[in-house]
Length: 156
Image (cartoon, rainbow, N blue to C red; front, side, top):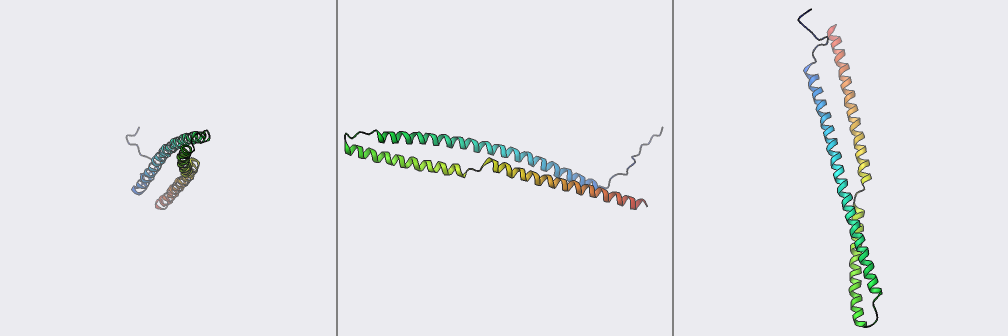
């Protein structure tokens, strides 16, 4: 039995080692950024859903208040005409302010980005990143092939 063990392959050149380390670092960076992006997307989506629910709840309250105000205006009796006119004006102002608030809520709901659009954008970004990784792996294989050819030329 011999005391010395040698590898069949020669040690890799420093440039190849450095490039492989750099590729591995780029891969780790992309993986971490993708995870952070998914977490950010989930938290943003949760916030948007909770804001949407809150706005819908406010909208329902405003609809109830509007219905009560309209019922109140409809149920007024004709006992005192001047009192009725003043109350009607107040009710109309209340209705106008409630309708204005309702319009604001509808515009705020319309301005909220759709979760599906964000999801589709993230899917496209994921595909792009996968293409980058495939290209990097292809370049790595090309570099290996070139190194083999150089070794063959040097061996001759």
